[in-house]
Image (cartoon, rainbow, N blue to C red):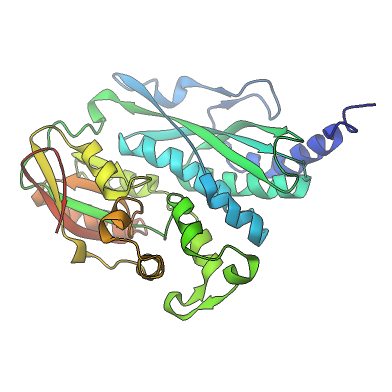
Length: 341
């Protein structure tokens, strides 16, 4: 009897590490210390030593049941982007620059090529965010996960000078709300998605005219990473007063998180184009509109508030960074919350 007989293939683990090294190396930042494969990842404080009052920010999350689609489609090279996005977008909401990221993959059986494909997606997300993939863990857990399945989670650490933190405390009535378009469903609400659609490899491979694409391709589209867009807006001289990453809980849960007491966010639902996938889900699943906005991003992945005289500059900067910004509403006096009209 040995470990391999028990279901854990140490050699496969070594092979996975070798295959993923090139992806990890692509994310290296000058502040990274030591090589790949140590017991901990080291990152020099040189990145923020000149800040007046550096504040470390952190974010952690996973991909959730969207992974079920990856299993059915046998496509594993983009879910890593989702994992990174869910973490770094939260860090960026506070005005932070993501510095480094670590991932955790737990699987029933270590297939080195599959693990390397997952890590490729993680490295792609890190490159989009400008973060270093400083470490991670792959745990082979036979008997706990089915052989062909895995879970993926991670966390990011970022930094911001305290004076530059986005807190929402200076929000004023009349401030403009700008929404940055999402790339689709992102990585939230998939427990409902999987109830609406027939989750088979055949149905996911079906061309859907309303979507101008295959259902699986549209649903699996990776989450947008907004780090560089928010940085571009700040570098344009715009002060972002408040910011919200639209994740699980949609508009109703996430927008109030960026507000101070005494103000309400009023969002006009027809101020931007809602992607067809959301209309299709609402119709096919007979889902009430409020439930849609309380579950999904509905086409807006990030909401930020700016002063009225800086709105156009902010939108120009977001566009220059490759995003699609929309003026979607305003801040008004009222009970803290969100109103969709």
